[in-house]
Length: 278
Image (cartoon, rainbow, N blue to C red):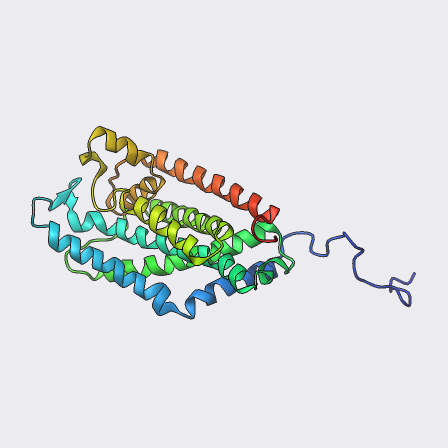
């Protein structure tokens, strides 16, 4: 029996029948590499500049506050206390910056078709965008951690590696998803900058990065516990110091739940084509 197609017979699938039946690994890898290369081409601006800015926070706060009755916070030196928070703060901000740029610049420049036309499912598109943002977050976080490891008077040796990876990764994923959501909604760079300046930056700075929530009045402690960034920074700090402002198990569940909710929202909006395909 001849298994070869007859003359004129085509091997192309019929309309509506998918050729790629499972995950498009090739397309997903290509999108991820594209996102990484995009920020790595200007690494001086996207990796090293944020790292230097984060280190300046360490210098300013340790010099200004260490000798004014705040040499110890939660039983650890002040420099050791703020170091993990600064690392993850840099990771969160850069994850947002990377993800909030991709689709937005495509809409502004008219190249959004480069994301919509390839044979990628909605979940594959979302994973590629988030993966690139998380990679940038770890590049910045790694650069800051390495500099702090050689910084005099600062100790950033990991104590609980699982907590560092859990809260660092899920925190970066959360901000990447916030960035994707912003990129979908925004119509110009001013919209993205507004979200960063009036939402992301305040929540990051007021999440206990530079102070212990235990020192706040009860009302402000409640407000701090409503801040999603609080659980990310507190859990990440636990990975280095072994102490935190909240139960680590609770924080781990909260961060995971936030990621799931944000992923579902972004998936639904990408699938509907809201403000993208119009």
